Length: 85
Image (cartoon, rainbow, N blue to C red; front, side, top):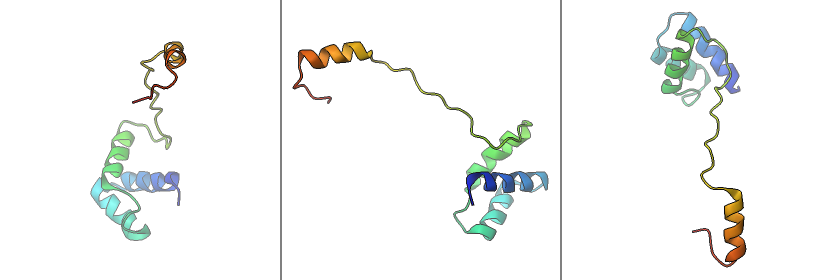
């Protein structure tokens, strides 16, 4: 099963009125002890409670780079034997 399938099961358990720990136990009983983590189920429950029943991941974005590529290139050209440490 893929992640989307497990998220559908979590939504089903949420709509059935089960709490997160019971949902995790039920899913793990059916698909193996490591199928879902209770913390993950709680996070998805919180998402569903806000009205968002989509199964996609939220974009996390990337942090801005703190170094300019041009400065790095100049530094390497000046001292090519310098290591990155």
